[in-house]
Image (cartoon, rainbow over all chains, first blue to last red; front, side, top):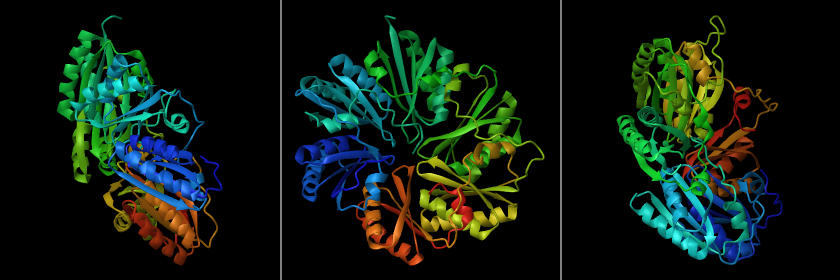
Length: 204
Length: 392
């Protein structure tokens, strides 16, 4: 896999447990400064998102990304490299796809749990209660599963309320995150339309 | 269609899930419609049918699962919303599989690959059973399936449990004398290799050293081939970050090699198990020791450069460590390996001094961002190892 980024001035990275934190972090990074989303990867429990730009832009975006990621998850590690040795941009990760624009009212809802069964149940209730689409279901092993919901802001809020009510009693809820006006690059990488089959049974 | 329902059952471990699937399918008019594993041994099975049968089936399924392991989650979803369920990534096709031959099945489930291999060989020795395959489901849980007449399967499982316990941790076991044909949806993939006919090349012994991470397994292979005259067979990923290094050779050589390999793995990272299987059954070899179809890679010509392995439980830690190594020492980045459960390793090459310098500096930096698992130097890698290992 290749990122085709041979002349990266600075590389920014955010690593979290689960996957909701890097989605929120990537969105925060792109909103804060002019950086390019490069891709993400999982090592079976932790995930990392990569972006590039000028030294100043990466520094600014990294700070915003850390703040956004911490809204979603506790464990967040950030780092940047100036003039990274170019093996890295060409070696790591699931590369970012084409960006996808959403409407002005579009929002993403992230429902992260331990367990797959609770996600099936929660998504059934969510889609019955709110006008949202299950855009993607990401499994990064170590039991963590994250559903990405798409819809208008009001509907996504309603969906997250339903998710909270459904999941609170199960003790499997890791986090609920609302992203308003998600960045096109984030929608392209983590949103729908087709559910991504990221996981296998063991592969960890 | 008006009162359709979806049943959800999530367990830890395959023995629990398979026992539940069999009980549910026999109890009521339901069918399997999905299966998903998410690591750490957590497995989900989805069933569908009319509401009353799904309720009845799930009740017996939960009870059966609890006898063989842990139930994580259970729920009946009445009138499931199609667009929610359709968007979920679980495997639907596997549920088309059936086994109508009426053979009994036995399942041996262990923590780690070492007890699984030892248990498998004991089962193949003890009774006339077919070793139908093995796989892993995360959290270092692995299982092997045997098939045959009921008495044979029972005898095999008894022997397998005892042997597995001697070699490591037994997680669970299960015998289904008359499995429902659709339980085949949960069977592991068949062995990669064909059992060799009697009189074919006889292997004196099969040795296994199981370690945590890629670096530990490379260290184990290095230690084994330098100690005795053994052939490197392969590295077998076992989930939970476990990697088993397998060698074959005469019993005395394999025994000496395994001791040295275990010690090398422990020095480099962490050794989680070791075993010597004397005169392994052809089925054991076909199941675990089958050499991949890919040809041996041609090792680079001597003089060989030293090999360096940096392994962390953090991508950022590894990236920062490698950046530090490449900027401060005359080394080349050769490849990268992820063996699961937070583990990620980088392979570098260079002169001994440069690789040592790089590893020292890389380890120091990596440690600032996450857990350092290994920073291991192999000053003189043998070509036997270079040809067999996946790094390129």
